[in-house]
Image 1 (tube, one colour):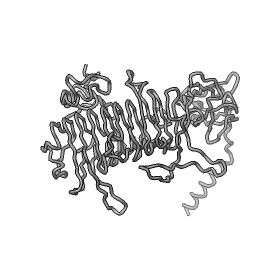
Image 2: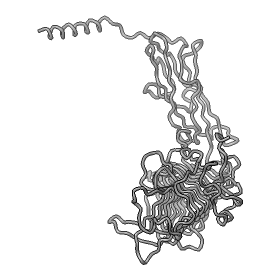
Image 3: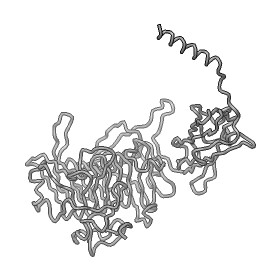
Image 4: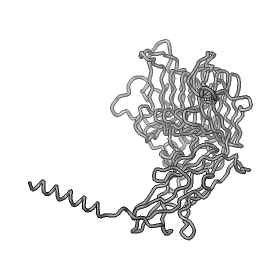
Length: 521
């Protein structure tokens, strides 16, 4: 009975209170709004590509519920910005209400066609304002976006069926139909310059017998699931040059994603890969930075070609979600190469092949989760879906005056299926290597570190003294165990380090000659 009486009184009180209270009464704003920022900078975008969504918070610090009579973009419906105010999309709003001591979110986006504006330098600064109220109570928040012109390469689309063109590839002389979106580059598109950046949707394919030449200072930006494919009898020539300004890298060729926001500048897996198909020839990459791909470079086939399928020098590959360089029964030569921060291996030479790296830093400080493989993986097989192995020769895999390190241990894996019909040849000479087999998990002749046919003059598990590997700063300092440890015979083959510093007198290991870090002064 008491419980029933208590319940009845509670219900009566609630009914009485709600019948007596008045609806919220909103007073007009008086120009005293506060904002989380006075200018919203929408980071650089390419023409006709939508921006990310940015937010602005509007505060009502007063003790009264208020209504903003007008909230609008200064350019009104003609503005290239779009707003979303508390869940409502538009460009002009009326009677926007904020409770006392409360706030509201405004979300801002933009899509801008630079061709509608004068752009003598290929860039255009687009601005507008969000206006709150009017006349004496008018308050404004600035909106600023830098729009960049670009050359766009994208697959053809059938206007009737809406089907996007997919690729038919020539792989080692065999025609293969794929589901990859993309198209072959036209003859007029086979030279990329530094005049405008290139934005690529799908896979831009170098046709049979043609060469894609990329000049110093060119910038290539790839959309999700996009990249470059070099087909049978075709070539890629990346002709970057040394840059004096290591922040701007003005002369290097840069491959990265098409999202330019600073918070995406080091996010792995934003685009596909540079894929050198079986049958491609004489591919050369010099002074390039390849970042944020799924696989930085995928190189296939032709291990016995007179010239290496890929020659890469003075180049950096960072933030690959799978592999930095993945070779599959192919031939690669690398000098002054830096690879770091990959979800699997920084370098993997699989199904045999021929690989030679000199004065290179192959590290892996992946911090986006666990990884299965070490910095360097070598094997001589591939497994099919039924777990049957195809085996091939690892004709050679030589690492000379290199640093092979990372945040796992050990950082090399030599995965051989023994077969008398094939060879498994490798050698690490004068390298600094992280390899400490504490639990005796790595046995057999491939891991006999005293066998000079495979290991000679190496330093194990001593500090490389990188500046900051988490930020891909792999230059070495005064405390590096690799200082002055390089063999001159290899240093004379690569006399300048990646920063153009002479190394022939007292060569250090890896791609850099050591420096004194600022904190050591």
